[in-house]
Amino acid sequence: EVVAILQERGHVVGMCGDGVNDAPALSLANVGFAVPGATQAARNAADIVLTEGNDGKNEGLRVIYDAIVISREIFQRIQAYVLYRFASTVLIILFLAILTFVFSENFPTLYVILFAIINDV
Image (cartoon, rainbow, N blue to C red; front, side, top):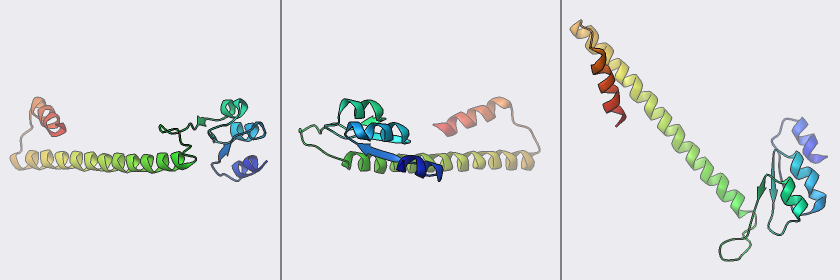
């Protein structure tokens, strides 16, 4: 019930569970996590199944935290790259526009294409 109420209020809901009683909530949640040692019903209902660590230790929910941190770092890098490419493209357009107006000539299409390709390298 709690998952449905939170979703009705517009929240994105994540649920962790390990038993048969958690299976309905795991399947209803936006993201369901089955923890190590969960029953087969919970594993089938979950979107993500957490397993034991490489050394046989149970890492618990730390894996979720690490995944969120890494995904945020990746997202920030992608944002920075997109901003860089946008600024670079604007710079190219301004450069070509200024050269066109200063010399009052059109550049051959091949030059513009080669300039764009070299800028991507």
